[in-house]
Length: 356
Image 1 (cartoon, rainbow, N blue to C red):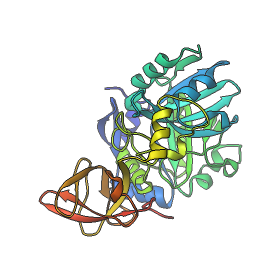
Image 2: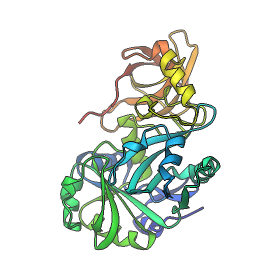
Image 3: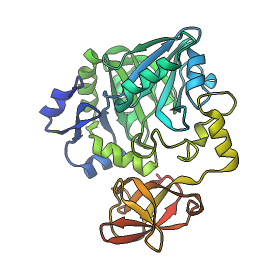
Image 4: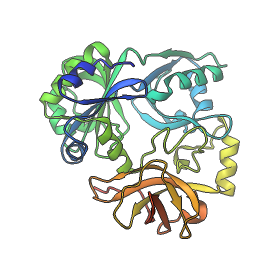
């Protein structure tokens, strides 16, 4: 089991620690609902240092990214970030990721913790253009400072005007007394804020300054409820090696202005349609949908599975994502979630579940 540079800090704070993607991670401190509401209404900080970071550099860096990722990275200028995914050769997804353009020929790829080795090997297997690749995952930490008060609470920690960093843009500057950290206006909560990339040796100083400035420590359980309320996909649940971005509603990051792995498969799917789609649903009655619960029709016949589900702290009702036949994917469609012996009625709705 690996530790982040802040594991001892989380333990000292009384966090409940659990194994996650090979790391010893804080799942909660004071309770999921309290932490969830702190991010929705004020500001919280997550240690997400288990995420992977790859540096791709050189004259052919963009060529490697373009052929392995669905989004069009040629649109990235220095200081901008982009959400994308890496497809496999069979029309599935190796991983979803964020791509940062650091310099003219330098890109940072941020990948999921559980996929670091898989992603690295995949990129290497496709690197016939001799792009320079470096795995920085073991040496760098990542904090997500999220919530509507993130800018005001954190402004005293940087000489840069944080309010001027637009969504999916970043700067490299000073933060909490540390020079040259990445301050990125990204995050997976839907409540705004920043992600801070720094060296492992620097993260404790930043964490202490951020919590002193008012950010509440938040665990992975609230991170999951926050992202689910926005309908953001979680790799391993809602997307995996068997799901296509078209099925998963990620057509918006699948650009056919270039050729990339499985692009012909996805183009055909976009033109001809798919048999199933990832939908968002909310329960019409009391209950909590859970990962892997069956989705059934009015006759009790299984038509899909819940990929993510929870009791929404913001809405006070059961919500979830799952794949259903395309004919039942339109807004307002009625489905049922098999919760133990009961087939609980649910309605397909438009994302996000949580609207500010």
